[in-house]
Length: 231
Image (cartoon, rainbow, N blue to C red; front, side, top):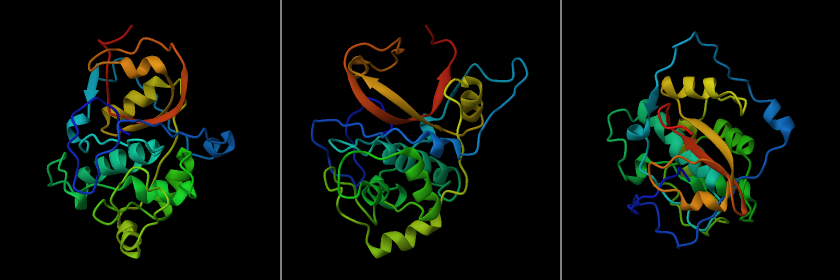
């Protein structure tokens, strides 16, 4: 869900996934995107730092395995988890694997999947987090492939304490606003098209362009930028 090639070190509520990796972003209706509040930053020259990196404050990188739950991973587990670490969980070690201190992708994905592992849209996930909140892995563990399991009553009761209060959209070409959000300490949820050459990308490499087979849509959490690493 949140990207990167790392050794598997699961939180107690995460089951180690199979070797197959899935995507899971369904392209949203343009009308749904248009209804999201627009975020746009107008900055003076030199108004942004040359780099910023929020990764040390993010939850530990997880793995969606063979389930199309990337939107729930990027949004609920990674981004909502980061926000909680900046607020109600500010005293914890950011990359703790305690299931009571990490949000469940299944709580979001399973409610929106309607019994089919075919992915979900970003607006649908945002609406669910706004209306129902986010449950922890202690309330609803993540097991790749068990997408028909619905949250227990305790998960709903706890989730209301972690509702999403606000969100908005940034135009895909508005890099200034994306960087401004990141520089302000706010991760950005990114929808991308994945081609097969992305799977060969190594740590610290710069992705220079698409090639190979189109694999599908994917949601990732954008946690930083570095102007010195460009092509």
